[in-house]
Amino acid sequence: MAYSKELIEHYENPKNVGSMDKDAEGVGTGLVGAPACGDVMRLQIQVNEDGIIEDAKFKTFGCGSAIASSSLVTEWVKGKSIDDAGKIKNSDIAQELALPPVKIHCSVLAEDAIKAAISDYKDKAAKKNAAE
Ligand code: FES
Ligand code: FES
Image (tube, rainbow, N blue to C red; front, side):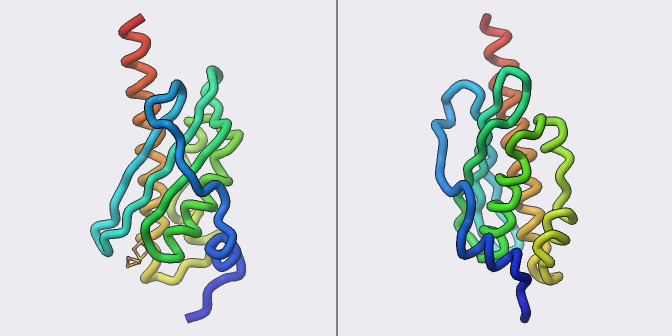
């Protein structure tokens, strides 16, 4: 199976590997698993007061395509508003990386992870507002 240059680049030199303090202000954490294979992806975002994602980090326990998908997504979301980041589709990721059909679920994992991170951020912000 031939993998795209883009995919191999993100797999060999993944961007934004790491973690953030999930309790820190403005941090949203998404932790998702792929039922198809059991792989797990954690994606975190740091959101500023204007709702812009300033930084993103990930850790993925999974295959090369899942690692490449999460690396790509962390690059894409930086500088985006949370609304725009929430519109990223797995098909955009799959297309950019030229994922083969059996690896499409790896890009679904990345879409689910960013959505989960955004909703965690929103939940935390809502709780904080309620407490103030
Ligand atoms: Fe889990 Fe991809 S099947 S590593
Ligand atoms: Fe399961 Fe890629 S996330 S094979």
